[in-house]
Amino acid sequence: MFNIFKRLWQVNWAEQWQYRANLIMYILYWLVSPIIYLAVWTSIASANGNVDGLTANDFITYYMILLIVDQLTSNIIIHNFGYKVQDGSLSGELIKPIHPLLTNTLTNDLAFKTLNMMLLIPIWIGLALLFKPQFDSVSLGGIALAIPAIALGYAVNFLLSGIVTSLAFWTTRVFSIHEFYYALTLLFAGSFVPLQLMPEVIQNIARVLPFQLFMYLPIQMIQGNLSAQEITQGYVTGILWFIAALIGFRIVWRRGVKQYSAVGA
Image 1 (cartoon, helix red, strand yellow):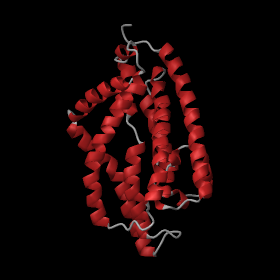
Image 2 (cartoon, one colour; image 1 turned 90 degrees about the vertical axis):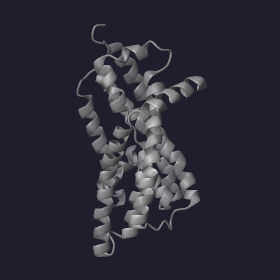
Image 3 (cartoon, helix red, strand yellow; image 1 turned 135 degrees about the horizontal axis):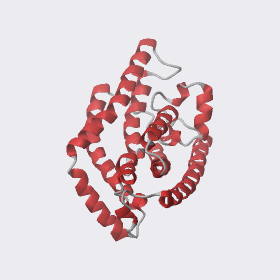
Image 4 (spheres, rainbow, N blue to C red; image 1 turned 180 degrees about the vertical axis):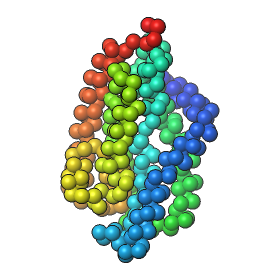
């Protein structure tokens, strides 16, 4: 299995380098919203002194960390797998003795993510020099505590996106459905605004959903803003969602493959 992933990595790594212009356009598109949120909330906090106790530096550090965490937990499988179901190119992968989505698509996503990080790092440094965040509350212990949460967040997000993408077996509207999923992620993961500034009902809903694991929870761990109980609750919720997402993905995938019929097949 190691040799399989090694070979898939070599192929997908080389493939990603062939689309450098697309990579640059994606990273710039992806950076726009967080930078706008950072600038807006920083301006508001600077003008008012703070926003519910959060200072301008709190917002700067939050969104600077978010840029890294979001990149690590996000995925693009709707774009590199959904079309395969619709145009029938999945047929060639189904006859191989490996899972199309959990091997080739996963490796492709990791290769894309690695290249993105290589491009993001110098941009991040430039933004740090521009906004001058003070990471006083960030510690190595907090970062170490957040690493498993980031890995768990990526796994849950990948499986949930896999479930949504697998709906392409039944409908051609899968990209629209995924946009709705993405909208939920933005709302409950803390992308628009840190969740502690959201209405209490939104915060309570977010605690039982998996989305805060994609951004908010790891960021708060890195910033050292969570109690031991909150960290434990976050990990337990994440593990339960991972199990549920894994079971859900297996069910949807098996039924979807049975439903699948390529053009001309």
